[in-house]
Length: 372
Image (cartoon, rainbow, N blue to C red; front, side):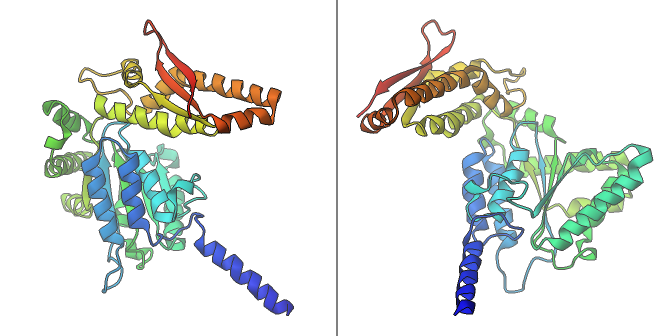
C-alpha cells in the first residue's frame, strides 16, 4: 500500500514536471507557434526580418521523414544598435524552450539553459590562447550536453583571426563535436553593414515596405565578405566556404518615428497600465502623450532615433514613471488608513486614469475619474 502511494505521488510529480512551463534545454513541441506569435508581437519595425526568421526556424525544426537536419541553422543578423537584434534572440530562446514564453522571465538563464551567449571574444595577445581554449571547451561542453542547443555570438564581426577560426570550424564541422546536433541554431549578431541599411531606409524616405529581402541579403553578404577578406585571416577559398554556411542574412532596419510611436504605446500598455490594473484601476492616454514623449527624444540627421528602442524606456522613466509612483503611494496610504472599505469601494466603482499633456505643454499629468 505504501509502495503504491509512493508510486502514485511520483507519477503526479512526473506529470507536473513534464506539463510545466519551466524552461528546458529541448525545443518544446509548440516552439514554431511560440516563435511566430511572440516575435511578431514584440519586435517592432522589422516585419521582413522577423517573417524570414520565423520561416527559417520553423522549417529547420520541423519533423521530417529523413530525420533531423544534417547541419545547424546559421542566421546572421545585422543592423544599427537599438533595432531589436539582442531582444530577438532573447525572445527566440524563450519561445523555443518554454511552452508558455510569458512565464520564462529568467531567460537567458535558468528559464532556458539550452542557449549560450558569447560576447566579446577578442583578447589581449598574452591571454588569447588560454581564453580561447576556455571558450572552446565551454562551447563544446554546452553543445554536447544540450539536446537542442542555441549558440549566440554577439559582435561576431569584431572577432580576431583565431576566434574566427574557432567559429568557422564550429559552423562548418559541428559533427566533430556531436554529429547528432543538426537541430542546433547559431545566431550571429553584428552591426556590420548598418550604414548601408541606414542609407536604404533614407533613400526610401522611411518606407521600409519598399525594401526587399533580396536587396538587403545581397548587400549584407557582400559587406560581410569584403570585411572578412580585408582581415586576411584565411584563404579566399575558406572565406567563401564559411560565407556559404550562413543560411540567411537578416537586416534589422533603423527605427522610424512611426516605429517609436508603436513602441511607446506598448510600453505604456505593458508596463504602466498593468501596474495600475493591479490596484484596480484602468489606464488610457491621449494620443498627444505619445507625440509629446517622442519630441523629447534624440534623433540623427535622418530623423532616426539615437540608440533606437532603448530611448523608449528612458523617456518613460524620465517623464511618466513618477506620476504612477505617486499614484501607487497614494493608494497604499489609503489602503493602510481605511482598510477593507477602500477595497470594496474600488470593486464597486472602477477608477479610470487618464494620462495627458498638462496645460501649457510643459509636462504630463495623470488624472483620476470614476467609471461604472
